[in-house]
Image (cartoon, rainbow, N blue to C red; front, side, top):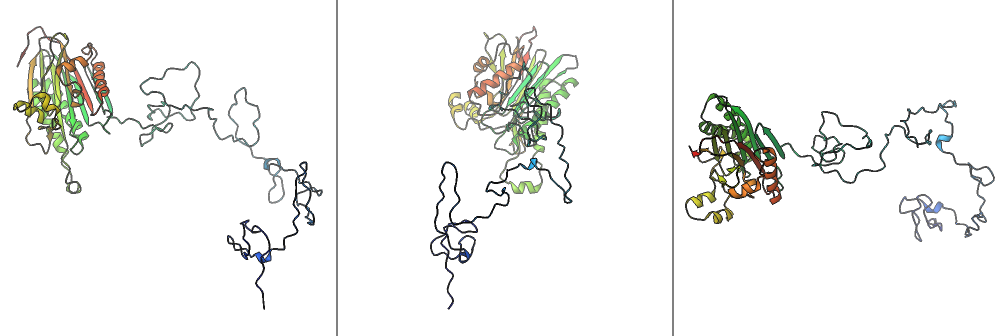
Length: 458
């Protein structure tokens, strides 16, 4: 009768070093047959004495293949220290590394073996925080470390670290900062007119847009134009709607005024041109409407102003506003537009006071806008003849929410806004951001140099 092979008394598998248990006949990890393991010799522990390890008793170990024959191992060599041979036994020529870059004066003349020469030097320290993008970099007194690869002249440079190239996804390849989109913050000056638009602190994109410009009337008198549009967030593509409306209205005004069209009529026609531009955005394929039947057509509000010699014309649809702030702050400012909104309707009907109406959650529900689904387009225009110099403020509700009354708007605007309109627009945008920046903020300033004649409403 054959017998089952007996397990050798070993604590670990000779093949894979897996720990074994008493009675195992095969290794549970690799399946090694433990019956072929020779019997374990008598235990003779090896103890280190003064650093020397005596040879175990009862075991005649063979001489190590790489030893010197006296129990001492052969010296260890690094691979680079031994000459190589080819398949025929001939020695190989040592590889010729590329010439290393010029070493600093403190570096050794010959680099140590094993150093790669194809890697550029790296700085010992990296800045832990990117500089403030609002501060312009100052020229350093000493030469700064040159980055390994300077961005190309045509490539965008990161606004945070001012060194890395911005990739196609809008992130810096050096520090990883997301770059502001083109419409997140916009500024423009055109003659005496200036405008600033900002995304604000709560919205993920800027749905406002503006258009400013200067032209001349047939008699050579200058004329300034500003259009500000606010996209309706509940509609589809509000940012496209505001951009299309502002461009169409601005181009219409700058084309009509030099031909001698009355500024008030030119403003009326410009609003109609903006309406057509927004309506055109709703002309989508039937498949697009089927995929999103619940979406409204693109829509926006519009407000604009034209300043000529002695005449101020305003036009609007929606709840964006125009304010008049005289240069002499001892005279009262004024609001020149009336909102197309639920709150304005309640006040006009005498159902609520202005404070009560604008405190209601329905206050900013607009009753007039540009878009294919607007009930009926009713462009509002008005003409004024100020009798003194001042500044015309054209803005969206992202600003006037933080300076609602004319007095509050005048207080927020710097005294030199007529001489520095861009600076004044920046200050007003900053006022809204400091107040919370809950909406997109856009404002345009048009200085008004009053002629000697008196004022009146035309």
